[in-house]
Length: 162
Image (tube, rainbow, N blue to C red; front, top):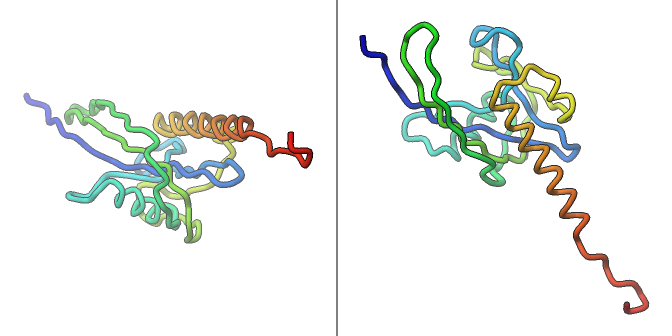
């Protein structure tokens, strides 16, 4: 018997706020039991650019509008269906996305059921999916980089001209 193989490309939003919190969405129990948290995002529609998909998914799952700040990471993995249905090559594009508007709300009848902001410390205590675990590490690294850049900025000269 030949097992089906397919590729799924998905785009995800890594969004942090001014307080350093990360936006996470809980996967709906009908999709995966166990209160698993992940990034807002999902599969691309046929012909849809990833940059469009990530903002569409952010709006669908959280109610927020956003703008892409940059590319955070691209990862992939091969998943084997436990029921023998085949293998999937999952390609995951993660963008840094700044929330620019909208209002946080739950997704109805979707792959997630709620989204919320968490401090990085609180997020690390949640039941995070692999992608969300990686995203928290990226957010922590970004926060450390922001702090070190601020520390390295030259001080303004004082009034004595020195």
